[in-house]
Image (cartoon, rainbow, N blue to C red; front, side, top):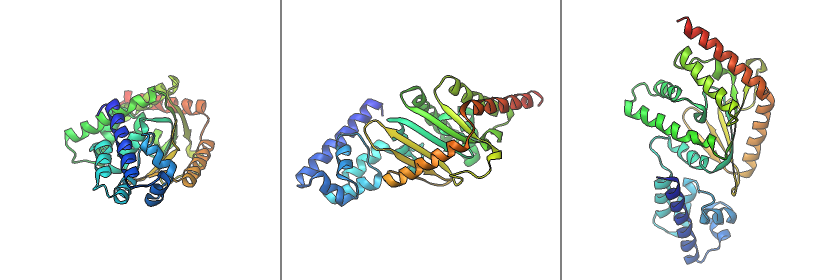
Amino acid sequence: MAKGSRQAAWEFFGVELKRRREDAGLTQVELGLRVFVSGGYIGQFEQAIRKPQLDVAQRIDEALQSDGIFERMWRSLIDDHRYAGYFAEVVELERTATKICEFAPTMVPGLLQTPEYTRVTTLALNPFATDEYVDDLVTARKERAPVLATRAEYWAVLHENILRTAVGGAAATARQLEHIAALVRERKALVQVIPYRHGAYPSMAGDLRLMEFEDAPPVAYTETTFSGTLIDDPAVVKRAHRTYDLLRAAALPPEASLTLIESVTEDYRRCASTT
């Protein structure tokens, strides 16, 4: 679905929500109480400023006795077979974010990946995958990349593990790191590296992502190997921001991080040239 038609569909979602809420004789605050969100959130859903999570859409259906229409609209707008169900909504939010901050301890974040890196890691996780499945995921990652060329401010903190793991061999890893360095030099991304020597660091359990928006509250997203969680509770999001501040404090400054990335890249180039 094209960006314009997707936004129009979310606007219809909001109009229909407002119509059915008013028909039920409920204020935004009253509906919010029934579905466990604030009245302000209901207003943002109705104005298509913010998209509800699936469980909220389901509770709206229950509260308004709307026979599952909001869940069905949600699924048609957000579900994408190329992404795990828990990540599809994150991709949707990514398109409207004004700032994205990520921490990755073991793998290059999707927005920074080369198609080659995506292909190798997809096959590592799915050794029996069909070529069509792998191609779909590579294409999906490529479609997300333009986020870095738009208004979104992108900041990534990577652990040195990522630099030192040869994914697809020395030459492929060199190309991946060259790609990250190029994005930094083009000022499309700000990247910091937590070096091995730092030892223990916050958020050792998995990936962390923060997203901010022009007209909606910020959200956080955490991910482990088999699942992910989108968080919009203000208190928890605040704690996630504090964790990210500690991660940035643990990392090398941007210029030193770029120097390390380029140094490791050169090591991989030399290794590739001798094999």
